[in-house]
Image 1 (cartoon, rainbow, N blue to C red):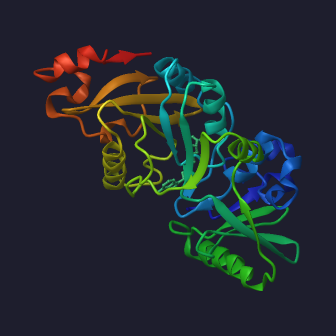
Image 2 (image 1 turned 45 degrees about the vertical axis):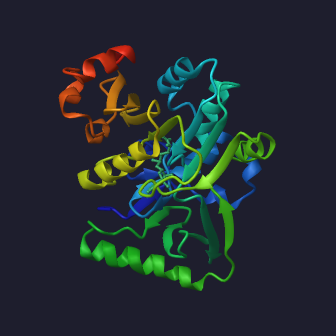
Image 3 (image 1 turned 90 degrees about the vertical axis):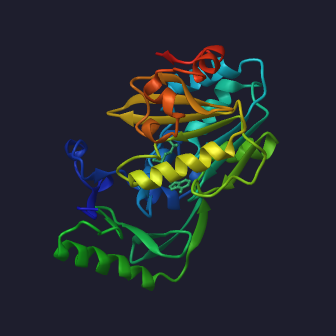
Length: 308
Ligand SMILES: C[S@@+](CC[C@H](N)C(=O)[O-])C[C@H]1O[C@@H](n2cnc3c(N)ncnc32)[C@H](O)[C@@H]1O
C-alpha cells in the first residue's frame, strides 16, 4: 500500500469525508455488534485488510445480478456457493431475493474471524495467523501492508503496528452480519464456512458459484486469477454456472458462464461484463463470445449469449 497511514473519518470534519485517504472507523467492531445497523457494520468491516484484499462490502450492492439469479432459478432449488462473501451482506440480499428458490447457500470467505485488543486507547486487529494487520485510533488508521510505501512512512507504519505487542487481552469476533448469523442458526439451508478460492471445494457440488469483487487486478496477478477461475470451473458439474461480479465507480457489472461438455460458455453479460471474465477458459472457437463450429448448437440450446 502506497499510503499505509489513513485518516479515520471519526476524527476529522465531515468535509474531509470525500478524500480518498479517509477511511471508515473500524472501532465499532469492538463494541456491542447488535447495536450497529447492517450498513454501519459493513462500513466498519470494509476498512479491514487481510493480506492484499480488503473486506469491502455493503448491502444492496448487487441488485442486477441478484435479479438475474432469481430469474435463472425461479421454481428450482440450486446449491449456491458464494466465494469471498466478506460479512455476508450481499449473500443476505441474494438469499432474501431467492426466498424458497434454493436448496443450500454456502456463505464463504477466507477471512471470517479477527481478534482485537486495546493498548492505551488504540485498537489493534489481528489476522487469522495472529499477525497485526491494522491499528485504529480516533484520528488515524495504520495498515501493516507497507509494500509500495516510501521508506520513512513504511518504517513509521511498521513501528506503530509493532505496538500491538503491548496488548494483553485479545477478543475474537466472527466478521459476519449478526442477522446472517441468526438466519444460519434457524435455516438449515444456510451455512457460513471458511473457504479459500485457490483450493478445490470439498462440499456438495454447487449449481452456481458466485465470486463478487474479489477477482480484481488490484489484488491478484493475471496468473492467480486464471488459477482461481480454473479451480472454480472444476468445482462445477456440467450445467453448473459461474457468476463473476465486479464494480466500477459503484456500477455493477457481471458475467454468467455455463459449464458444458465442451467447456465453459458465456451465457449472459451485464454492463460490459465482470473484470475477471477474460480469465474464464473458453473452448477456442467460442472465445470472444462468438459461438462457432460444433459449440454453436450447444450455446444455442442453452440460450447463450444474452446481454443486458
Ligand atoms: C472486496 S470483498 C468482496 C465482498 C463481497 N463479495 C461483495 O461483493 O461485497 C473480498 C473478500 O474476499 C475475501 N478473500 C480474499 N482472498 C480470498 C480467497 N483466496 N478465497 C476466498 N475469499 C477470499 C476477503 O476476505 C474479502 O472478504
